[in-house]
Length: 455
Ligand code: FES
Ligand SMILES: [Fe+2]
Picture: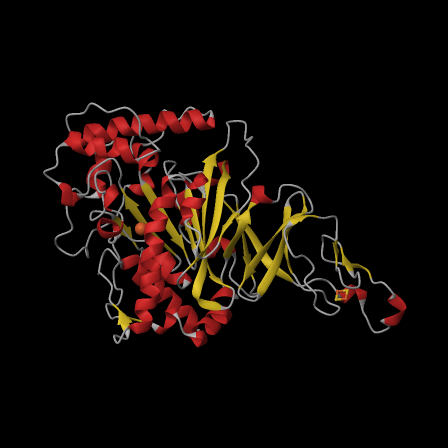
């Protein structure tokens, strides 16, 4: 796509120039660039990050209207397996109702409102713990103790209310709006792009949830730009293309944006650094493809060798022959956003998916989750999907060793996010200012958010 609105001065080499030199070429869908066009440039008002009125309206206009990631299909493999998807005051039982059917029931008894399930698990039916009204997995009322005492109860009509359910790439989505658009159109270009990445052939190898000291949008914004990397994560500059990260926002696409950040090359601000120094940085800091020193004359040769090492490591872990995996999928951050709160990554070096939600009714804290999706074995088998590790407000991400080096990076971000939340409350400036290019995904997100809020 034509590059038209990248401000002059974005450092070289571009992501596209780096991908063009790769030994195993990146999927075609990555070999295009679509910088945002036609977005506004004013400040974004800050009350959205703390005001209870904004939060309450978000519940009605966003959380009760949009498609949201509920779980992975492998979280509920057997009929009767279920998880709870909770968002502010809403609670849904997301259950495998039949072999090929997932349903989402409102988690509230139709007698006097008791929560039918307090946790996920596996059941044959839903029996309320208070008086014993019982529904089957299809949501039909099957038993009422003392049935004679409810002469006006129409059993046929007393089905559990349901949310809409959709499945894409091994992810289960819900939508509480009975009139919502289908998931297929809501996803826009995402299925086309992810054909190359095959997330349906992954399983959830790690899942960590943490209470964050900030609004859910602030948390998410910190993970969809690289502008903060040199200050917040200086340890990665030897092998991370920060200031030359590519940001894509496509015309007419409201729910999806992308960034591609290359690894195995130094930050453009470290030019002048010789290749060997760069490689030492990589060797020390990167578990995904770290190891013995790599002999290379140039940074592009180093990237190629690191990609080869990463392919072999990832392939060994999954029992797959990954000799054809692209250098980029072996090394880079290939990160998409699905509005409002899901951030799936395409590559295999960092097989992350993030999810961000309000923490109950509090607009100034949130729940952030990091999932790692590893490739299944060639026959489709895989270990048990990971149970969720729950971290509290004061627990560091590094208390979850299953996250590896991602934990340290997330802890650095979390420290900043605490200060951003507090700083915004002290601010006399009514809006936050955004970089035209490097923060264009944040701008795009807010324009979509504003459209939903105004609706
Ligand atoms: S509240 Fe559920 S059976 Fe009474
Ligand atoms: Fe960060």
